[in-house]
Figure 1 (cartoon, one colour):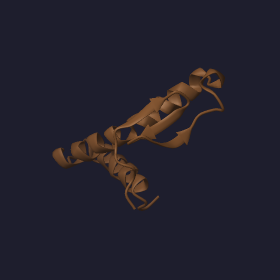
Figure 2: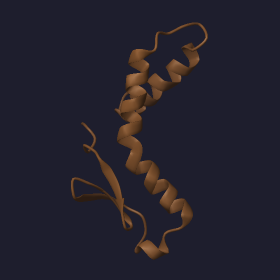
Figure 3: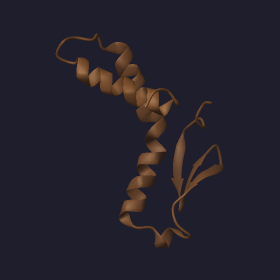
Figure 4: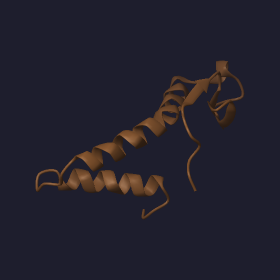
Length: 85
């Protein structure tokens, strides 16, 4: 299954994509804490982070020095796509 296509946006107390709400922060925007807003921004940028990481993996040759970082990046992509955890 694919994720909801971006762009994702924080609109009031909701995270939306293509005009549809798919994440809800609190009962009202005024009830949101600073942590709620930080979480919402992170959720909203997730598709861009995912694509940037996938592109970086594809563009980076594996070496002895970066093999652990690339393995961690591949693992994160796999978890995000429902692969191995």
